[in-house]
Length: 113
Image (cartoon, rainbow, N blue to C red):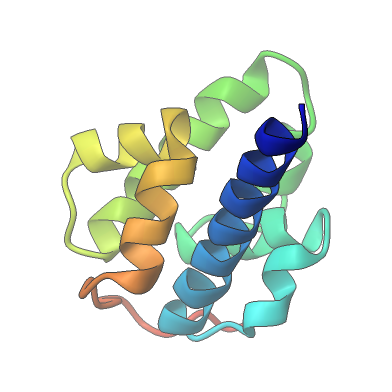
């Protein structure tokens, strides 16, 4: 049980650090990745969407479609494919650190929060 908890915490920290680096690459403050709701707002802005998309992300079942759209747009802004955006949605614990710590560069205007 203890080993599972340690692995879980290690993956959790890796994903948070990946989001932090991804936010910084996009021009946002990295600490915004750890604040609930604010991180959704930043993700919407990174995708070029209005801040009102946060409300859509809080509606059950609608949020699945909205999150797919947002992560696909974010992947495109990092010059990644639509499939990579789907991977960010379904396997974020793998794909978000790849964006954050990899050589992916933000190709859009910096996020203005």
